[in-house]
Length: 476
Image (tube, rainbow, N blue to C red; front, top):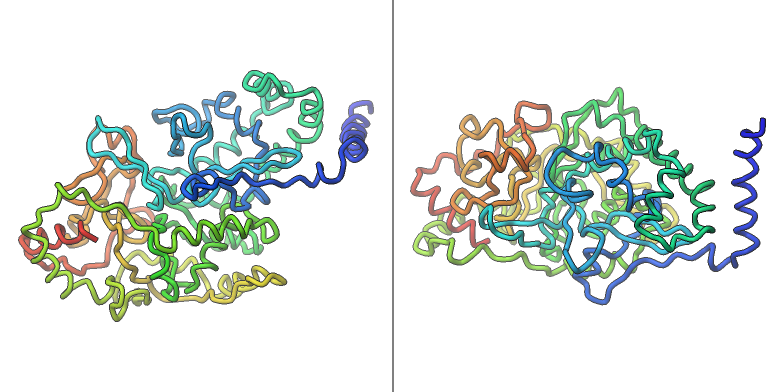
């Protein structure tokens, strides 16, 4: 009886003390991390994702130290095992994590988590961080599973967590410890367990691997769809964020289900954890303005055979430009699945019923969604920064452009993705060999949603023509 009374009265007593001892402005404190430098803001600023999926910062900080056995079995320390990128001497958190100063400070994710990657010219070279490119090494699914596994552990308790927190933050006050012990830690545990329960449907699908995410099935969960009866797979590659100005009015997302950049951005933020009321519209607008004309870095000039570029451009103009060159007849339009022939799972996962529900998001706000629709194919997009968008096709099932120009039956059936050393000849990240296997993720094209067929454009060219085309594609 005593334990039951304590479990009821202590949290209530602490809440009463909070109301009495703290002014309303302290309880209502809500200050996002911001940076004057837009590049820093993109990397570490808040978009409001802490609103629905924020984790108390000090708990988040110590989880890798307390539960290392739950981290992916790959090189690195702490959160970098999930492919998060740290900038030594710049910030103590990895790129893609945001911070919001509330009564209980929270950490969340922002745009950079999914849209920042690294590339190396050789295994010995230092990684080059590229903003706006797909985060081909980021393992979001494993990150969510890690948080759930920690919450399920009996050591996720006040005694263990507070000892670890005080080790990294000796100034953690007695008042903070009191709040954490009786309110923050129990509620965080319950929230993470609930999140794991909500995402249990993912375990019935093939693993996503790095650089990929199922964008819209989580929305079905939010809207109450039955993801047991609906076994669709929406897993697809993370896209780039460059040159958004030319994309306004084009049909966006892989299946072309929306043609407003602003709606696409807000739906991504909500997918990352924001709630309608927590969207940081000012912070998001700064990022939107920046990526409006953000340019991708050029392919290394000394790696391009200039003598073959002109011939490659002629082939590109004949076989590719109509669908992929800005101003082309079909660029930004949806190609029917019967014509393009690529894996249909991502297209099938987005239904008419979901489109209808998506257009209810933002009711009562001036930005309410209204442009979502159902399609029967995949959208043709501009190819800016193409060299950094490997692996290719909407589901990342083809490792290099060299492989994409091969007939589907000759494309690699199994390869490793998430390795950042570049193959400048085949144009794509290295996907085979001991290091790629050690650091990457084994991708099996026979799994549902991973098919590497279709998009046979250019596969009938002779080897000389393909070589010329590859040299030109490097320049995009």
